[in-house]
Length: 82
Length: 148
Image (cartoon, rainbow over all chains, first blue to last red; front, side, top):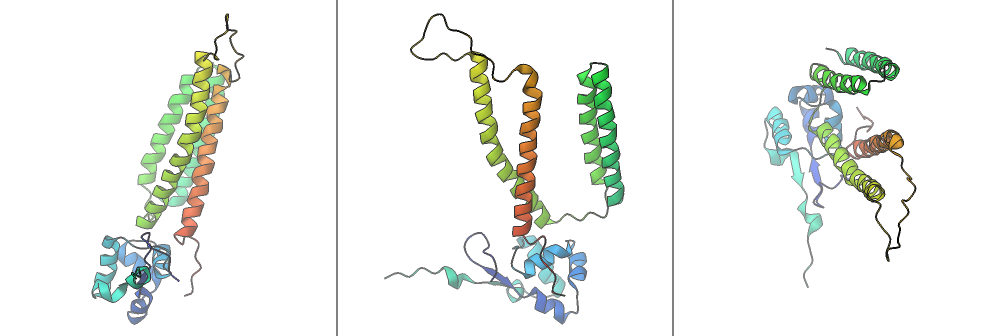
């Protein structure tokens, strides 16, 4: 279960899938976008939510849109109104 | 500069500082060690900027930022409480109703021990920072195991 992003809504991502599709290791991706391997690992595991800047760097590296990689699960924070 | 070279430099500067501390104690000139310490920290900051194999990204910056903020949030309370107590002693705050003539209270914190107290507070700040840094490093996955 990914950690909350800070506003109570979990952010999920498919970086691992895209890495596998592009045959990239965490180290390769980290070097390509200028972060540490630990940061890629933390993002994949949902421990850390990247900034918009880093998120765009990641998706541009895979040449896809941001919605394809990052999934914003807003359904968990809906409020029932009677 | 490589990371290990930087760490060697840190060790060397620390040894020089210890030597300078004892020398300034010998010649009874505290200014020497004070300026040496400031110069040493400045040199370390400059040297750290030259380290090439130390990648700092936004996650490590966030860990540092959060740890520093929490340290400040806790430390200022302790420091303020201590300072209020010290100021009360310096001003000889009277008790009410006033009794004449007031007897100066015994100094709980003599001036000569202020250096040790300040060092103690500094150690507290360092412990707080290290503690919070470990906490946030764990929170943001610093020691997560790889499954690759």
